[in-house]
Image 1 (cartoon, one colour):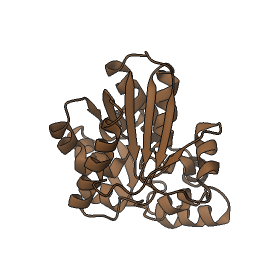
Image 2 (cartoon, one colour; image 1 turned 180 degrees about the vertical axis):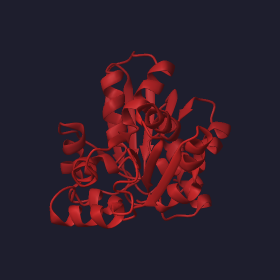
Image 3 (cartoon, helix red, strand yellow; image 1 turned 60 degrees about the horizontal axis):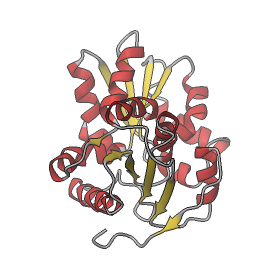
Length: 254
């Protein structure tokens, strides 16, 4: 079973880790578009083009299922990918919403993500359909913080407080609507206090497990479109082990 996973950067590795724990024998191909991260500030048309390019690259390895481990791409390009590809495509939005609804007692649910994800209102609309009261907040500096490896300490704490001040005390559940954000989970939890924090990695892994077979050689290939100085450190931090990776040019057609 060959499974492709893509994200705008390293954040999707949180989803990849959960997937590999559920399907250890499957073969995974991961693409992090680090040269063009973040997607959250781009137009819908650009996000869709980038997403199709990432999918095309992964399809060259004969993948049988594609996971869009990027909330912004899931918000703007998931339906286009499903229409364009002949293999199953799984996004991160629906599983995260379902998990949040499951754990929230008051149905007052916070959603934090990139500007693109928040402006798409995809989370807010799905939550409202189920009777929840969402409060959404864009946190554009969270992705650069994670990509630079600044996930704790005074700078991270200050940025978290700056963005989440208006949500504190108003929600009982907080959806991390960006796969980079779980790296800031402890700093967010420390500031928000007694709040259920939902990241979609586990929920996505359970969804994929229903569609995929745990068959293969258990191999992993990692690709990135830019080799940042702290990339090796972030890979080890997220996956819990050192992994070799390959750098590819920004997909021109890619």
